[in-house]
Length: 260
Ligand code: SAM
Image 1 (cartoon, rainbow, N blue to C red):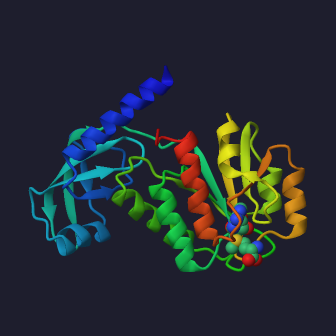
Image 2 (cartoon, rainbow, N blue to C red):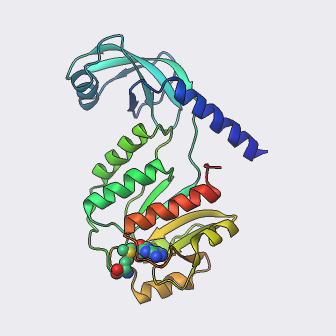
């Protein structure tokens, strides 16, 4: 029954999205309800008033990741400040499927690429993991959060992926939640093909991608010792971490996610 309901809500979500596609989309933090007045932040006023040159009375779409998508009307706008009034609900809340991406941070622009593309591919949670060979452990989480928001605005998402604080591989495994499978992309190549494995899984999932230098033999042993970890191969070639992350996420979405 839930599969049919999910399908219906997805069809409604897509139909409503097409209806208002041309209106600018903006992420806001405030709770959203009919008639509410929201003050624009300086950045939001600059974007709407300065960059888009919107004027009073102009309409846009707003979402906060929790309450669906609403139409709002600018009641006041300048380059530095502004206000808008929430006028009507456009799309009911819709959460992407529950898939986590655990990844060893790589160099900045590639990290940004992973965040943007995985947000488009519907990831629900980003979990940075520092491993022995991780060279970029120092993360600007505020910058990463804005990259995620920008991608969510563009990709018409109604929810926001969660960005967790970085943990070590040992912490990740030590605190692993009951009932969730960790699919470990193992480049050494003696694992089962990812697609075959994903077709056999019925539990909630997380994906794990290593750093540019790959996992150490000790880390691979530690991972393979866990009863909730399943190693998979992504073919005979060595993929860059960002390529591996997005390939595995694409496979998961098409087998287990909401691409059906
Ligand atoms: N160890 C390799 C090396 O040092 O050249 C590279 C690691 S690769 C750049 C980064 C991560 O992507 C790996 O740790 C693994 O998680 C994933 N990956 C890359 N190619 C893969 C493959 N063919 N199968 C499974 N995972 C792969």
